Image (cartoon, rainbow, N blue to C red; front, side, top):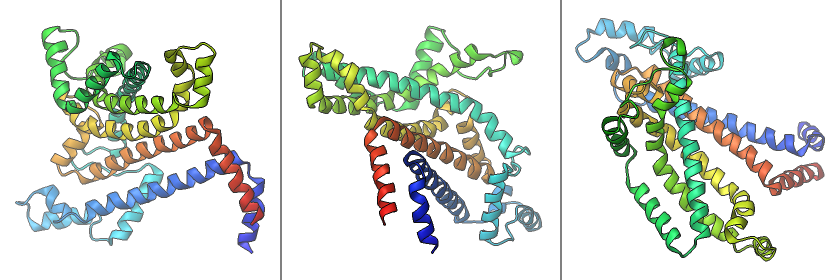
Length: 344
């Protein structure tokens, strides 16, 4: 009876809304699975969390008191549900090392890490699309071989090593920027938008080079495949050069695989901030996570990893929606699914 009611109601949902609801349901289920995996991974670590926090020389009475304070005397499922409820309310608990609310610590550090990742992703897209388009337009020529050689070099260079080279060149030798640190986004505290953006240029470039090398090679391959399509031959027959045809028509049709790879690369950029923020002494989420691991501040580690996972999943959710907007075949497939459900 209930199944018939859902089937009768399905045709009343517009295809676009039906696609959105399905993707939203997948997002929520994935977030739930990620939370269970993160909680379980920290829960199954060997040893007592309270003992790890207080150190091996702590008296048993103090360890037992801290275990009760942390709720470690409760069953694991009860603590997991309590953590989920706190995530929904925005109450992530108190940091053991800082004595401050974990939510405030993460939001404060995200104000640096998120702009850093977005700036690095913007550099990645600009460099990769430009290099991939140029290589595809010069296929088989010197320009193509030059771009492919540079991308191979970019794949071989670790981001932290490149970051140190950039510091030596632009901060130590040329003295164009500071070697590290972050002035903040507030002009009242001695920072501001431009000083803050300037402090993020070198770490963003160090993060972007490797990812741009990967994306440029994929962009070149996708554009070369599209160049063989009939509509591209028609564009060339109308008088467009190979370079202009790839620019006007090829990049849009290559957007689907590039968007998918871009979502994966954003996750790599967020992971890379843990190292890069330590190289440039930036007070971001990656540096907070490294300090929390060193201080055995497990509550910060758990919520920080969950925050990073949520950012990546939200980005992938946005990319799925962009797929439906860019590729009309996905919208037509959604309409066909709704019609099939209604017929059943």
